[in-house]
Image (cartoon, rainbow, N blue to C red; front, side, top):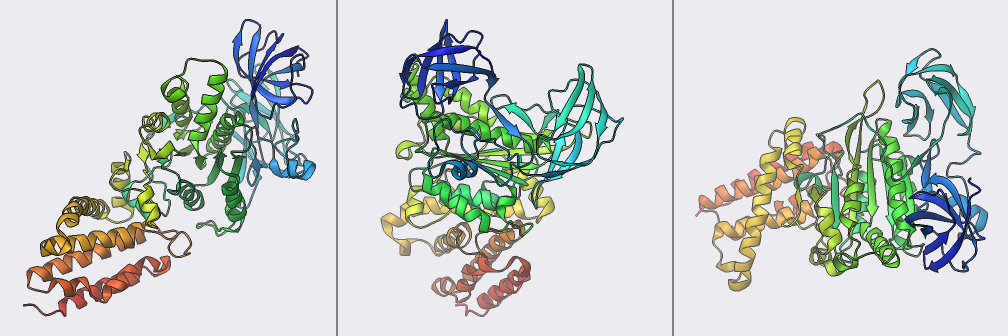
Length: 588
């Protein structure tokens, strides 16, 4: 820590202005006041340094000391991240609770990675090997689901020779290897620090090509996301943004989940903390916490720390991506982050942009989402890693034309628009199928046609056309009533209703319905379309419409989503039953 002292000149909420910090740079960390509160320099004007403080500034006054650290806001990366719960500046909340009780004491500190935990380092490289930045030196079994790879730091330039390496048991500060570099010997431990605002380097970016299977039918079938893709979930209050985020965090087929609660209500983060340890990962059967990192910065925590929490989460996610894992980051919600930016911008007396947000709102949001992608990681083995970003947006009054939603839509490729009318009608997930879209649709269709079923794209397009035609007919139904429609259109309305209620609607509290694999999704949609085909053919041959719309087998179709994943053959038997039931009807 630098011994360069300054002093507080002015305090305005979370913004503190100080003087005398000679040599300080933008985004350097400082300690403010007698309580040594965390702060970050965000503006420099001559000898006046504006600092955003990540803790409550009550009791800070002019003349109190400010000490600069000479380092930017950074996170510790190493074994012990998985299963951890951090605040916005990577302080471990469980350790702070153990040391200080229910409330975080101002200026409280605890190392992000537990120094008492012992890890077994197993070398992969050997003495004499030539390595470059990103190469894996060894592994640590971090949790039941995650093998942590200790890599050569991206800061190492050019080739280096492994001078010393061996099996080691110790804490994260224990030396595991020594590298001979052009600049001299470098000691490698299991931990290193990385500035949160600096994206971790990669060898190259690739076009995302594999879908991120979420088990949510409306997402996977109609508005899919790829591994390495970006999505936003905007919606008004009560439309189920957090529920959607929780479902994606629980069931997405990724190796690592980083969940950032940014300015959300504390009880929602509590739900995550209470629920995740008891939920089972669908692939391994182990607890979801065995692959999860949580960053909790709730609405009652200091507002300035919201920005830090988003960057803390993305840096941890990039670190696991660099190991070659597929990672998903859920940010709930970026609107609260934008509100924090607006407050800090106002206190800095910057020129306001639209609705009072700072002029750089769009570039900050873009810089965050641009850190996603499907990449070739650093290192001579050219491993691939993916980082998918899913951000919830909370527009005031559900107005999607407000600046945060619009700035987000300019940079993300999937839009899951939530509709409060659907939510109030108890239709979950409340994703509006007429306004949402995915720019990864062609990529996922090609993948699903080749790997799930050849008719995937055809079935999806037909179902979407059905829902759009239903929306057109609904206006007519409101005017003249359902009975005034032609028989063919009434059958179409019935088929569209089945797609909505039996396919798109999903019960998160039912173990059989909360997650649906891609093969089962295709079978379920095909079954509904099979009924429509059979009924339409029978209608043309003179069968009575009301009889077709009240077949007892329709109840079995509505329950088909509860068929177990290992019993998909039951769909074939049910399709046969539909054919027989329709064939048995009299023709007139």
